[in-house]
Image 1 (cartoon, rainbow, N blue to C red):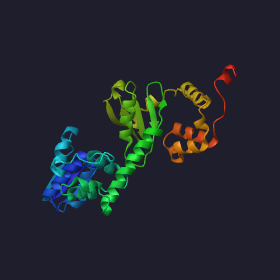
Image 2 (image 1 turned 180 degrees about the vertical axis):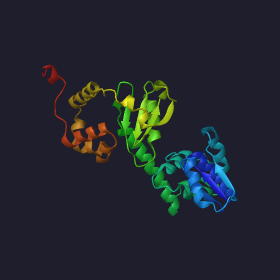
Image 3 (image 1 turned 90 degrees about the vertical axis):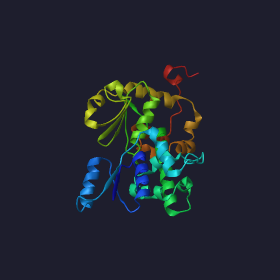
Image 4 (image 1 turned 45 degrees about the vertical axis):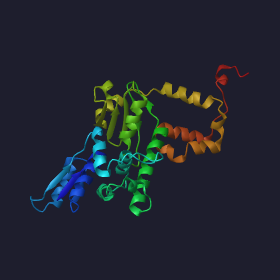
Length: 283
């Protein structure tokens, strides 16, 4: 028996349920059907193997799967931790996660949701730490991932360690509901509020399809105005070097171009000037 699934929450939950019914089954994971078929060609010795495809489910069906896997108490967890659904999602996004091993871990919980949050076992501690690391990375991206303003687009290029670009794009879309947003990672563009550009509300496209939108002139005047405003406001905490380093740690400089500029200010300091210096009203 072979169980195939995608490394996303709904598919992983369904694969865990299939694994409870067929504990000796082999797990095959892939980001798309083509990748799964490619892996199956190396596994299948003949055409007689039974294959169960764990398809993804819509968000509304998640509680039903969680109830089947962890009983009716699945929603009871510490308020200090992520919900079980978010926990599973964050682990699957970790760059070091082994989706097949994690699915076996979920099935091995035997309906006890507390095992997910129990850090006593080696594997439990590993996946709990994975969840925390991805959550921290996402929060850092939301805090320091600044967008650049083009004529028809808010755009940012990022290269996070974990698979969180789509999460960040959706967050930016919610924060800017009246403007299209693009998040570029390598050759992939994630689009939020895409209806303004003729796409779906959230879409994933090759970068080549939106290059014409990025070729418009960057609003340098607006960016320069922001730089002047930031540097001339007499907020003493910005000139507290120790506090500035704490609030803008060095790793944030690689998150986005504007974050790199802010970190540069932390390294070099900010001149003690005010807007009055530009108007001649220094008194």
